[in-house]
Image (cartoon, rainbow, N blue to C red; front, side, top):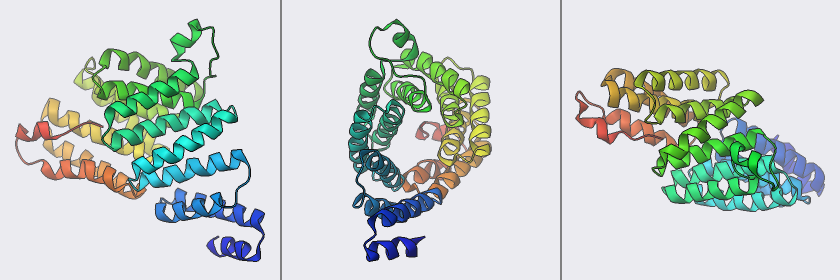
Amino acid sequence: MRRLAHHWAAAGDEEKALTYCTRAGERASAAYANVEAERYFRAALELVETAAERAYLLSELGQALARQSHYLEAIEVWKEAIGLYRSLDDQDATSRLYARSARAAWYAGDTPHGLAICREGMALAGGPPDDREQSCGTRAPDSSGLAGLIHETARACYFNGLQPEAEPLCRQALEMAERLGVVRVQAEALTTLGLLAKQSTEEALAAFSRAVELAEAAGLLAEASRAHHNMATVLVEKQGQLAAARYHFGRAAELSRQTGAVAEELFPGTRRSGLRSSRETLHLQSRR
């Protein structure tokens, strides 16, 4: 694939070069070869002509950057893609990239900015389902991207101390994802539900277990990693099960390592190594 992309570019056939650069980038991204994916998507962007193609390539480039922990650069790339998708009236893709941008802001350490990104995206979509039903304005149709954005808004509310707002949003996202068959958002929403204060320890662990089951069966490494991480945190905080927690922190780190996301690998990895033999380490564990 690499040789073909280089061949057509050297021959001056930009259409074929674009096709092969794009495919090479997609293949690298699927294998979590993120540096290579970034290189091919950047090369493809130099050849692209249509707004739809450029928006797609920017979306994929942002993903490659985020997996390398270049979160702020990814947000800027996605911002351009969002503008293009809005001009194309593609609300599903717009919502999806708002959700990704918000998560990147959180990983970059700017929790309020993550929530602000979600609020902006939700306003463009017409608000969550309950609000949209009462609104006379333009409403985005239910979609996988919108379900993901509603969930990310719930998650951002949780991390900004707005738990009463987080729970109904999370349940709306889960219901929409189940109805549409969007496994990724189902796993994410279940994981976030497990974090909420209203959940009993048993309910939380059941939600995490279901999220792990869904994500691992679908090959969703990042989502499975997050579920394992939060399960480990609750096992330590609520039950003092250090051995079980070490397993889940280790599994979370292993899955993140496979995606090439170094920062996300270190997040559970350092917490696993910090567990010793007493519950004095509990407050060192954080949620994600």
